[in-house]
Length: 272
Image (cartoon, rainbow, N blue to C red; front, side, top):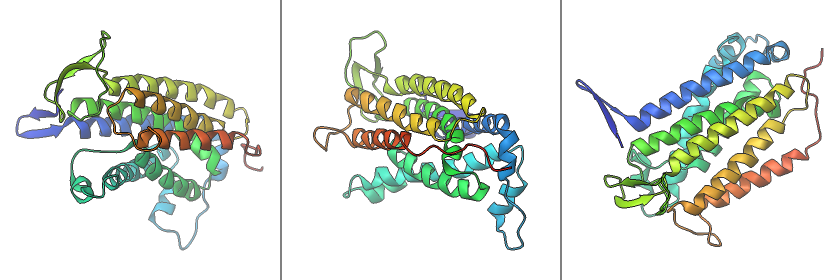
C-alpha cells in the first residue's frame, strides 16, 4: 500500500490521484462515445437563447469536449453523493465522517452521479436514456480505476480471509490484518473494466439506430450483480435480512435495470 506519494515538498494522496486519473480516463472514453455518435447527436445541440446561463452556454458551444464537461460535473456530484451517503449510514458519527478523508459509498456515488446526469441530459437536450447509454461505459471505467485508490490508500475495503494465491495482507491498513484476505478492490477493478468493454461493444449497435436504453439497463444489471456477489466476501456489516447496505442497493440497481428493459422502445435518432 502506498497512501501518499512524496515528490520533494509535495505530498499527493494516492486515493485522490487515482480518482483524478479515473475521471480523466472516463472523460476520454465518454468523448470517444460522443464522437462515434456525432452524426445524429449534433441534431440535439441546444439553440442559442438570450437568457441562457453559463452551463447552458457551455453545452451549446461544446462540440469536441462534451465528455470532459460532463465528467467534471458528474464526477464532483458523484463524490459528494458517495461521501454524504457513507456519512449518513451512521447517525452517531456522521458529522465526523462527513469531513473525513476516508469513506465513500458506491451507491451514494451512483445516486449523486445519476442526479447530475439527469440534469446534464436536459442541459444538452439529449433524450435521457440515450444520454445514459453514452455515459455507462465511461462510468464503469472511472469506477474501476477509483477502486485501486482504495487499495493504495489503506482503506478497510478488503475481504474476508482466504487461502487462495491471490490473497493479500494489510498489516498497515486502517483495520490491520496479517491474515491473507481477498483484495476486493482488485477484483472490482478487473470486473468493472470487463463490464466497460461489454457496454462499449453494445454501444456500437446504438450507432446503427437501436432504441436507446439497453446499454444503461445492462450497466445497472451487470454492476448490480457484480457488487451484490462481491459483498459476500467483504467484511461490511450486515443489516437487511443478512445483507449489507451495498447488497440492498445492488438489488435496487438490478431491479431498476430489469424494469427499464421492458420500457416502450423509442427511436434513437432525432427527427429530421
